[in-house]
Length: 333
Image 1 (tube, rainbow, N blue to C red):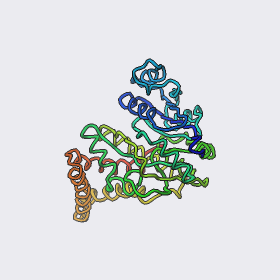
Image 2: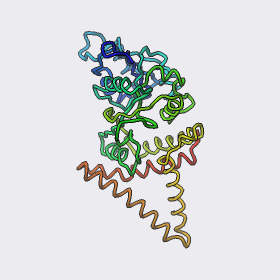
Image 3: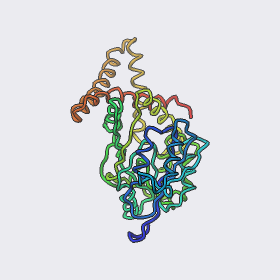
Image 4: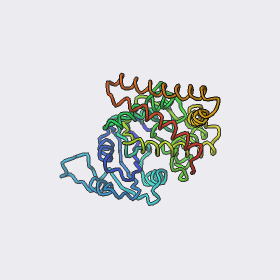
């Protein structure tokens, strides 16, 4: 990495499709970084049809007379992503990028002002190929707030540091990621065959190639979760399905927390079926115990946050578990 007096150039890459409701906050946060070196933002638009493209063009066409000085045409570019998948968009943006450091962002994320400067410093201090931090889920509506609490609760997400925080150090994967160009070039970027779980798979290849993936708890990024349990189901079903695909590609990457949801689905299904057999008491105990565990998690969230929406973490946790597990077992990729 370059010295503090000659900081490396940075490119923030953002794949989007139909993100008109969230994207302005994302781009404003990217352009408002306190980083002292060259910085550009490249957005790969997957042929949005909800007004996202018009929003992007207004940003890219802004001039010095614009009342919002963060809208700098010299620092924001748009590339097309006609294939419409996330890894295709990321790779298209990376190819167009000029930075020595590549910062991965998305249309639901809001980077804090010091995110780039801290990440670049961490890259230099650790020699890592990728650094990242915590996905700080933050909801606006009651349902989003409940889902956000589920996404940081240990019952919901296990011991994943990028969800819950923890000590700095090498990890399997991180949220989003800030990469050296050298590391990305060495492994060939994102696997374009993976519609989901491409971040985790990329980090597997980085580690296999000898690069360190480093977790920094100070890199906390605001994330706006899905606005409905139905949307959450679709998201986690896809996560499970594509996780099975990635584990098939890299069997050694399987972790206990990833095996838990499909195992849970099998146990819950067997317990439900047992209610029609002599094993009914054992099945009922298992179902009740799971319900009490999830319910207790929701109550803890509501009490600790002093927000009744925390109770919605109960159904959100169950949806996350079951959708992920069912997707892993039955999902097609």
